Image: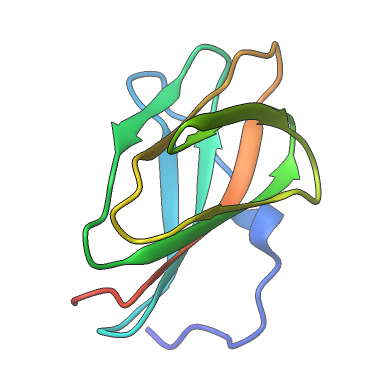
Length: 109
């Protein structure tokens, strides 16, 4: 299936009861870009990508993001950078859905 090169990310938002919802827009050996939705109380565990840089861009809601030794609540329009090898993760401590774009590069397909 051929996907459009023009995407409205929030049209692909969704939810899962058992774990955070993920939708991949594009994946190649150079890049992965997708959408993540965390319902209240859900989290993406602290982890790292030894050889990949990553960023999050918050599209709706608020999340508690950790990158290395820093942690803070971030909202719509905020960009969170996680360089390769740095531990990072996010928790939804609010009462509303948290939706954010994730981009990882390079991404071995």
